[in-house]
Image 1 (cartoon, rainbow, N blue to C red):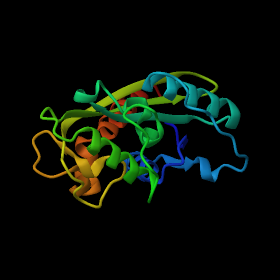
Image 2: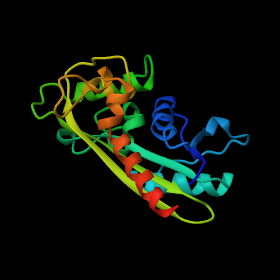
Image 3: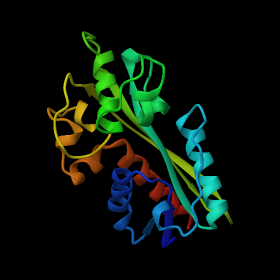
Length: 205
């Protein structure tokens, strides 16, 4: 089994979740911050899978270490699937008009999304996570996970990150940002994708 893997992200919230999900398997998680040489891969593809594959392959070839890369985001039905692959920088794209960056990107993204959802009855949405494992010497594989729910009309909760404060998962009366990390990992798109990935790896290694 692999004992060490680079999780190709600088997002602290994402990294924390990957460490929690992988620690039980005895896998040491390194982040891009831990790498001596700095190298950046641009996410310029049109799907979560293409972005994740590009990141995993390029970081693995550069650092010569197994890499897990993820592209994830929120798809809102009433917005034709937006923010989608633009989830991290939704505030700054032309669709729906740009949102001023007052405090931080997460808050600007949420403000813009809630502005576009004002008066909209259909609040259905889903979180999507596509996780790619790439071993530079050997093979690559990928999995995906989904978490379905609804968009609230205001942010609630201070846990998690990203769009968590405005997303109520199916079967729950609280937002993702009100759940403990353990509760969130059980139902989250990322938790589902990572568990599937580990199952696949255990069969292969």
